[in-house]
Image (tube, rainbow, N blue to C red; front, side, top):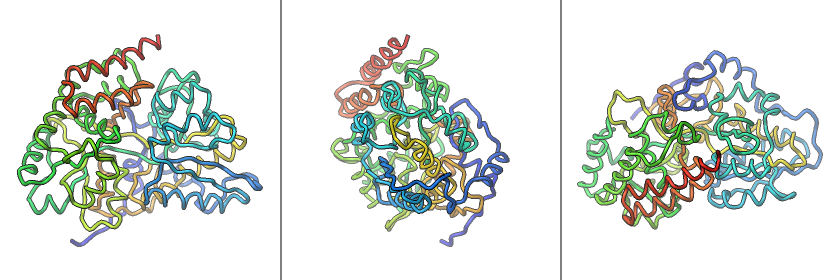
Length: 461
């Protein structure tokens, strides 16, 4: 098939790649304002430091361990060192679960990382703020005009009050280099061979699952050994059954939200129905996420539910073609809602001896050059792209960008629900394991998860 290239106008790029808005919120910056901002960004060859720094080591922890994304970070680190005489970046890359379990202790030590990626939500960033381990970035946000790069709704996802109790407001504690949307990757070759089309409604999607299974093909490649992928599987369907206001209220713990509602029980029932019908990979409870991604890349299934971050890997050394679409809603009239937001942000250890240099590093990681490299690697950046960046029409990356554009248009950027309480990730991961294993029914599942949520809300009063 002949490939064409679409030179996106500046207005479209800013609309597509403007950082996410909360559900029921609107962007705080116009495309024209973004155009002005992009033209004033420092070029990639300019050093951003005001004075040369001699023989300084900046220790940075990140979770960009996969091949393509790791290469982006290595290149950005190399260019930062080149523009900062005497500065060396000591990079430590960890898988997400390892980072999650080790970063708190590391940030409490004097020789800990100066900069570290810290996951959003109460269990990670909120806990570190409560422990007084993170540096408020408010002054640096003003200095580097990050407010012109990111909407206030995006910043709120990386914000807590100084005591760590209120999520979504207060001080800024991190900046995110990438945007994310969770949807459905599909194998274009398998779809074309069988005449399958992208479904328009959730009913159509479930019919497609049945048709794929009838052909002897795994409908959804899935591995839940790590626990967190099951949250995305469940929540993708949950986001079909609820509205944006509910997801927003639930995540931020406001307006008497509850997990024990009929829509969540229905989503849980659907998960068990899919297990019963064999729609997931055989032995999915014992398959890790990275292994499931390799199975999908190798053509061992028709679809996979995960985030836009996988696009780069699927377009590297692949002998098959892949596409991406959002989980369809119950009707075409319902505004699109999907799990999404911005990627894991970079934060600064409060006791670092080089806070200004660390802040320069954060600014570099959300610069136009960083946006360019992420886009070239087929990751959707959270900050504006250079105006002349070309996106290949019909490509997997174009699909993920379009999905991001749709949920922004519909004010449908949902949340990762495991952010809701400090212990919610562990609670819902464990309960979903029981749910997928058919050890509990949907009503027991939502009731058990609600105990965690309501206990936390009570403790906040």
